[in-house]
Length: 346
Ligand code: KG4
Ligand code: ZN
Image (cartoon, rainbow, N blue to C red):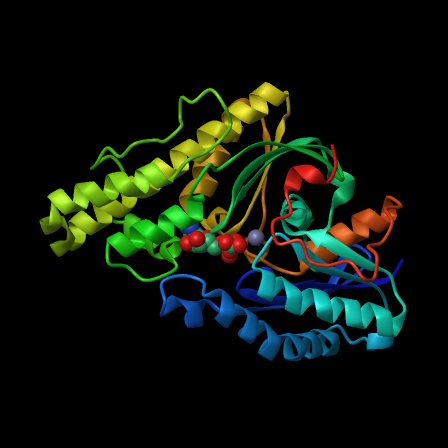
């Protein structure tokens, strides 16, 4: 094995990484948040155009920083799905062209399979500490997805539950909009919630007692919408907005934690991993840490730089796959925008 080039363009981050086996040499994430913020969410056509504009620049920066020559790269990995078709296409075609020209194997990576391992990236320089792996329940919480999976061994997972409608991050974003706050909603709600009382308003904890491991967040958003329609005066006071933020945040997080703990107990696991943009949330990190400490569970939350979309996790999964003797992807293979995490391995 040797140098691995990783590429991620499934949504609104253009990311490139170079790994030497499981060790990170260099990586960069070019976020489009500012561009999409104006529209209150990701605009697919704009995302594709930005990837097209930035990918080569980001790639060149990473190659320079890794102090390598492109011809030294021995394996190429890129996100093949799921994601926005136009956005995926830019990174995948780049990877295909690179692999074809440099005659190295190409691995098409499932974006969420990569998230499953990002909590095992640790140290300075970061490396994928796969030798520490233990069977775990993995929670992926981002703007597009809320997924609970049982990861029995590297490359062996089973999806236990997922959101039936809005993702947790999407719920933060949509409620922020209702509160007149900018996109993305998660970080600003977390910030304002610091001065608020999480028990000020009792918002529903959707699916808390549903007897399964699925999530549903659209009902919470609707509950907040009707609540504000009937009490618009609340939005005039900073203290009330802080209380609303804290109460909403608590409702979203309570369900995430309860379901994750239930999944871990049901599956008989002793380890939990968490990744995705919402995993940057400090209240989620602290509350989950407390719950895990009480039960003696080992908790690994991805470091904030690897919570959000990045190419390090993409290259890292390719490294695991190659080490396990998985065949590379056919050179002519296409993107899979609606790729299901359950369709990979059982
Ligand atoms: O993983 P990510 O960067 O992009 C994808 O959706 O793939 O996640 C972005 C999401 C947004 O919905 C954003 O509001 C949420 O993660 N987020 C947070 C925080 N930081 C980002 N949610 C809650 N608290 C945060 N600190
Ligand atoms: Zn993601």
